[in-house]
Length: 406
Image (cartoon, one colour):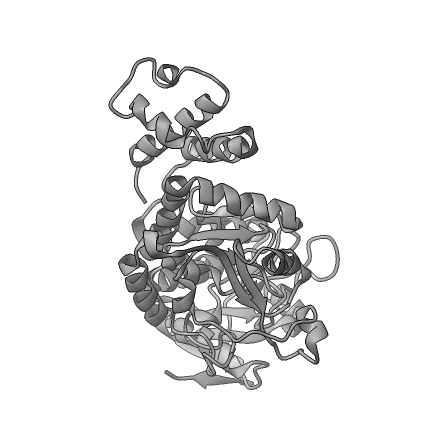
């Protein structure tokens, strides 16, 4: 990610817009008219700058001042998540009994003598296959270990009640003690829809194709509307859908079918729309990302479009989310935002095209540079090695498990 100096010209422009809006002379931005903050830039933004949007410009300026690029070495952008998730086990370690107490919360795996073993039955075979791709890849460098991996959508270890123990889940909120791992869908077992009947999967392939498209598509030619396609897995999506129906010049947002669809009541009384490929998303300037049952698998893909991503809610996390910063890599949207609030945000973006274009480019660079397949594999290795170092016992081969071979 670029150093702060890269943001400086854009920050100067934002500060000039802010100062014009509150009637402060532009020369006060830098004490004198430095080359980084030329006063003539004010005219470009003066008509757009007003109190309605000033709060967003202030938030962007504050985010740029505070932003510190992450450590690029050895998946360092995401390493703090490992420390945070395993912190609770640091004092007492991870015992065999603690793993035994949560064995019903997921699928049991072992790595013994650099071989991978799993209990015979897996709730979601394609998800287990996606996980096992990374376990097999990491196994040659791992010590013996034993772990429980949850392949359900929902995390299993709430902080305030119920079981406590080491359970790996792909997504969680701050209300859970699960240990996050890179989801199976980086390789296999992602959501299966008509466009991707075998599941999304193969992040390395999607990343290459979308990254190329994001680089080749011209910002000026993108459709200046907010865009969303997806099923109604949560009501947080309703406001944008309804805004789109009322103001189609601002947004093109429609519900598609999902497996639970029974009638048009499930798509807010309109016939379900056709699914849209990730590549087609890239035609639009403003792309909305909503959570599903848990975190959505969509976010990393649409950030590669070099469109501005409006990321709704901050409750649900995947391991790479903390490296993405609001107002730097995406525009944050409250999960309870009304139609009016969404309209204001979209209009802000359309009135400050250069400012939000910078956010789009930053989001692209973060995913392209720091969420490569080798970063995902690196995270798995670091996570499992750190986890194994906290075990207070030496695992012995469970003869009930079957060996997994590549």
